[in-house]
Image (cartoon, rainbow, N blue to C red; front, top):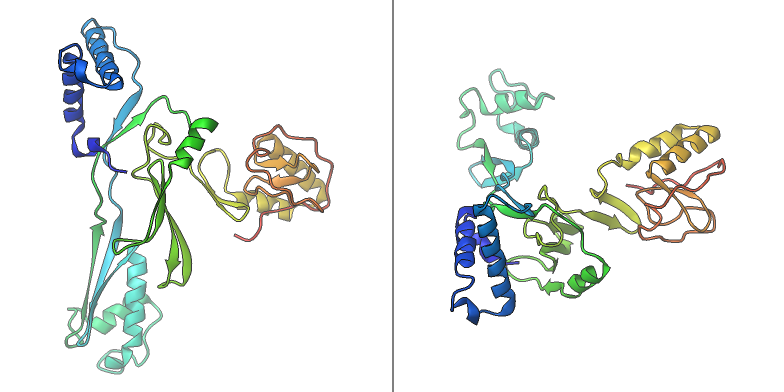
Length: 329
C-alpha cells in the first residue's frame, strides 16, 4: 500500500491539516467533493475549539520509526573466494567461522604450537588458525561486524479508539484483497488491508515459506494503538502464533502439565484451564481441547470450530482418563 502521508513528517501533516481547515469555507473549497469539504470543515471546527480551550478527545497518535533489525555480517576470504553472509547473532557467526577453520585445518595443523587436530572450543580454534595478528595463513582472513538492516524510517499514525472491523466491513476488505504475481523484485504475495502475506517455495532451504509483513498495515482498520497488528497464524488446525490474547501462556506449558498428571489431576487442571479460557470444551461432545487447536480431539468427533468455542463459557467436565493435547509442533 502506498500512502502519501509517508512522504511527509508529522509536523508537515499537521500544517497541511491546519491549512485545509483555514480554507474550509473559501470559494475554492466549494469546488471540492462533498467528503473532502466535510473533512475540511471538521478541521475548521477543531481549530476553533482549540483556540477556545475546548479540545476534543484525541483519536490517533504518532509513533516514531521502529528501530532496524541488527545482524552480524561475517566476511571470509581465501585465495580462491571472498564471501559475506548475515547471521542473527554473533555466536552464530562465530560458529560458522569455526566450522570453516576446522574444514581448513590442514593448512595450519602441526605447524609450530598448533595441534594436529582443531580444539573443541570455537574461539580457541579460530585464534589458533588465524594467529594473534590474524595473518597466520597467507591470503586468508575474516571480518566480523554488526550492521542494521536498512528499512524505510517513517513515523506511523495509529488510532487510539481501535476496534477491529465488524463482519460486514471485514468481508468488504477481504473482497478487495490483491494478488501480486512473482517477478524479478520478489515472490508472489497477497495484500489485504496493507498486510502482505508471501507464500512461496524456498529452494535454498528446501521449504515452503510463508512470510507476513506488517509495516504497511492499514491503520484505519487493523493497527492497534501500540502500533501492532492482531495476528493469528494457523497451520492445518493448530494455532502456531497468536498475539490476540496476551494472557495465554505458551501452549506447551499446559501440555506438559497435563502429560505429567494422573487422571484425577488432569481433570482438575483441565477444569481450571477451561475456566481461565486456556482450553475450550467442544460444544458437540464436551471434550476438553487446548486453546491452540480448532479441531476437537474427542473420540469419534474431530469437528472444527473456527474460534467460536475458544471464547465460550467453560462447560462442566467429567473426569477423563486421557485428554486431547496439541499435535506435534
